[in-house]
Length: 366
Ligand SMILES: [Fe+2]
Ligand SMILES: [Fe+2]
Image (cartoon, rainbow, N blue to C red):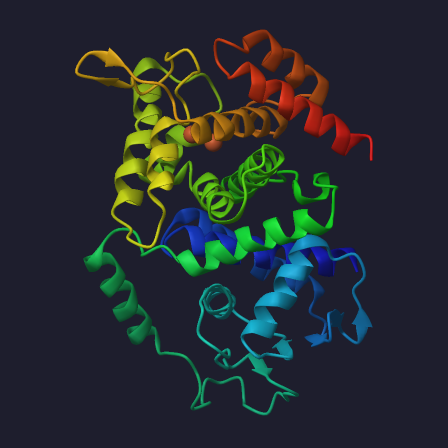
């Protein structure tokens, strides 16, 4: 059962990454391959995934404690009107990729592939896995065409805003029902997961802070979405620099710093997004005292970091230090609190630091 849960996690991480990044992004490719490797590990003959009420049933066994990823899978399948998916032996990476892309999209239903069948009530693997099924998604040439269209339109696909909103609405409604937030913070298991996990954790921790300050409804929602996208500009930075194990040299560091600018520009062009997304992407590495990057000055006069960027900066700092990275292990929570307290008033708004530590301590003592 552990392997099945790992597969669900891999599949959902890949799906959420697909909402955040282009299908051609290396991270997405690696995640699709990881999901494929995991499904191959558990496929004896076929894998049977069913949703009955709010239960996930895999190979006729109910999956208990499938966590946020299991809940996410149930929600996505329900929204698509899908009650059952069967994955047969011999499934290819390309088929898993297509499944992930469709799960991430907002169109109803799922297409059938030679080794993947789905249906509203029941499905059976009747098609021969030789590709003769009329419902089969596309030939390799067609796939190439789709790929070309994406490349020629823009190096990055249009963000799936509806998918992101769904994630944030879920956090907010869950916070209202349940006090314990720590279960929503996912540990990072690998580099590929970092982008998505970090974005999610920063969003959860930002919404939590904002809510505790009495911020509600639309603004809370805007903060959640904006926090989820705070590092969107990293799409424009090369993977070699982002994954470098050793210390970055000056040139590389200057390059990484540009993710704030790239992100702000990119998000500003998306009409469905709140303007706050662009502001936060631009300001989340500015310090409370105005140092950090980029410099916030207008006509030579110093400008203060937006209060919501200050909230995201606290969440970002905490999650970045807490996570295991290729070059260091994640820090203990208490050590991070000590660092935060040391730098309050300089790097962070002291009121927000006190509030954040109190919130986390309350959550930990539950
Ligand atoms: Fe950042
Ligand atoms: Fe970040």
